[in-house]
Image 1 (cartoon, rainbow, N blue to C red):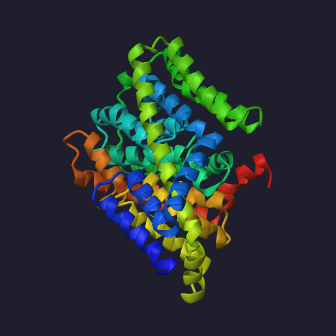
Image 2 (image 1 turned 180 degrees about the horizontal axis):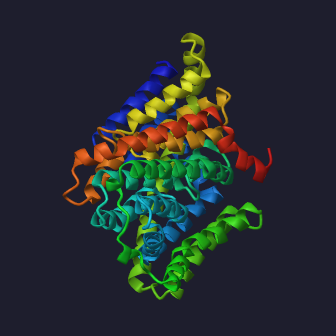
Image 3 (image 1 turned 90 degrees about the horizontal axis):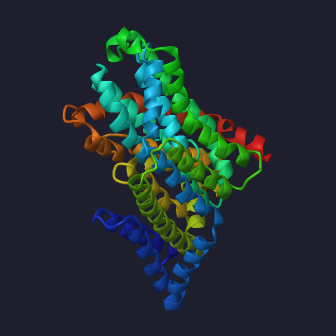
Amino acid sequence: MSYEIIAILMFSTMMLMLLTGQRVFGAIGFVAVVAAFFLWGDRGGYDIGFAAAIKLMKWYPLLTLPMFIFMGYILSESKIADDLYKMFHVWMGGLSGGLAVGTIGLMVLISAMNGLSVAGMAIGATIALPELLKRGYDKRMVTGVIQAGSSLGILVPPSVVLVLYAMIARQPVGQLWLAGVIPGLMMAAMFIIYIAVRCRINPALGPILPVEDRNIPLPVKLKLLRAGLLPLFIFFAMMIPFINGWTSLVESSAIGAIAAFLAAVVKGRMTRDVFEKSVRKTLGISCMFMWIILAALAFGAVFDGLGAVKAIESLFTEQLGLSPWVILILMQLSFIIMGTFLDDTAMLVIVAPLYVPLVGELGFNLIWYGVLYTITTQIAYMTPPFGYNLFLMRAMAPPEISLKDIYTSILPFVIVMVFALTVIMLFPELALWLPGEVYGN
């Protein structure tokens, strides 16, 4: 049996197992070890899984995962994130669509606190959504705002997904984080411009708050500003030493976790319940990611042994005669198809053994491609009819918001994201300039 047929069998078996409801790491790891066993015998099959585990345990930057996840949950469970929205409520309520614009700002800061899009979705749906609906905002507008804003979670540093990509693609985490800064802020700015223009054309979509709600003494507004900006200070306390080279990546993540913990203590919100919930959730999410990375490394090792990447590159470039850009666009389209039933992490570990080496062989920058991957996967599972985020939003939204409302709400923001993706593909320096400035070209 040829290696190409073995590679196809591996992918088809894995997809079949995923469609039957198996856990992502179980399906990927099982296919990897069984394929290794049949290819190289019991010794080879054992060594593949064991070597992947050892590589995972020796990867020092992996310690950043639990640190950043813990930081995000501390800020969320202690309700410090609520202070952010109160700040935006007071300072932005006088503008048409101001609370929706403030929600995008909230999502950017939540992304800088946690690095997971699901966390942004949960906080937005529980804090911002009820307030926006109560203030008379259009339900389709606000559900689209929360879904689009949560998409920034895997792009704005410290992105947990980019840590996973760094592990699989063997790229520096720090450079990937910096590569996501300008595209992430650019996309947030595009969302804000769209909201502002649309609410200017149709003020009923985002009405200005009544005067009595905005008539707050300046000292109170300044107090809310200080409380709301606390997570931003934590972020800078963590990132500035890292960017300047004073601390390592892991040390910076520890600074962030400690700073978040101390902030909750100082504000009197670090209860036993908050600490226990944060630790439990951190442990659960961290273990899930570690199992997924372990399975992906084992799967990638089998593919390396098969030489499947070279075979597929030859198929696309020599036999089919496709240009590197056409191949890249086809990869992005495949992400959108997979996004109808998989989340971003699952998509990464499934296709990384094939796509990442192929992108390198085609001559593209893997740091730049990491940014393209994160944006494309977010577009993928916010796209009807079966986008992952759409059903997540439906589970969190109140009964008056139907699935049709959610589908309709996200389409304008998907168009904005596709435009942003196109701009970054045409101008790679948007992603590569900041890493080049900090780390040198």
